[in-house]
Length: 166
Length: 319
Image (cartoon, rainbow over all chains, first blue to last red; front, top):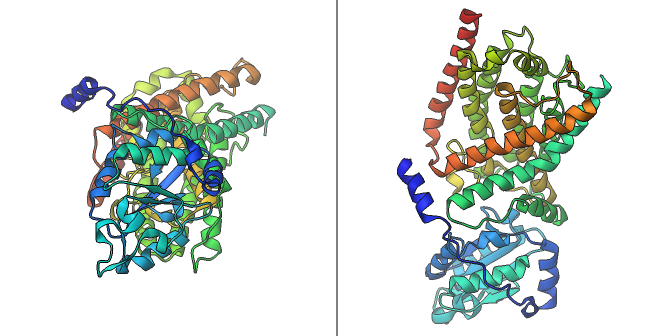
């Protein structure tokens, strides 16, 4: 315990200084209206619809101490009922199509869907594969897209800040 | 019911109702800072509640009235407990009826209501969380009763206001072995009852390790807001009860010379400081600890029960 305390004191704050607030004009008006209703608090439920786990690693670091997405009011939660935003990664596989649809329906309004990564946006390298149903927008309406394979944590944090407005 | 008691109760309800989300925010902030994060700010739980109240209320398919009533019962019992527990004043508006047993039963009523709500969803995790919460409740309630019994013996009353008032007039009682044993026992059960590490982890995402969180997985929108607000109030009330039983200084004394108009604001400020300190210490302690295995939790709680039993025994031998 003493060693841990010493480590905490020696390490201090590892969160990087907050970058400039991203331009919210990039959001389309309907999403911007939903984001205003959420007013600085966005609970995020992550759905892996068939991802290779590259995007999951980047989400983990976006919510880790260095990028600390929680300081902008975003928080990962355990249930879609608690969520305001669904963050979907990967191309939607046949087995996950119904699960994603039901998860979306379990989220109370106003709800936002974030397609995270190239696979979620347009199936990426998995386009045309036999187990792939389609992109996320083929199954549920998508409000925000984050490009990249995988997208860097900065991009994830910037997209979430667009929703929390902080 | 005296005017001073009514005023005090109103002040307590407002203080706990408005301040408890800030306490949760402060505890998260302490934790974030120790983990090297920046933290979302002390007001974040209030932002979450404001947003949840605006959201659509969804009741899961197949749930009945129990599911809808449970958050209301939980919040109502927490508010009544906030009114009658000596937080800012020892003059309770319901003196004589709202004693130790009533407060413990109120807290248990809220827990049982939420457990029934969790069962009503008929999901695997709801039932699992409810059964675990009942295990913890069955072990926690006797310890709360016993540890406060140890303090009530010397007063000859189970009235919480009288117990706190007696410690105020005879400060030497606070450092007696009875108090110390009871304090250790009560500290463990407060942690267990409020679902903090090492008994439960309020920030967990792993359904298999959840206790409190598993019961509320199906709540959404305003219902979830009520549950979270009530949980924060229960945490504040229990921490405040603990603080005032073992360090009562600053509380407005019912038999004191100071008029309540002056004594109450002082008492509220002192109480805020005490609870913030306790909450900060609890959050800081959590950084150093992992959650216990579920099967080890009864051992921990049985240990605290033995402490409480020893405190009661000591109170008779030393009296």
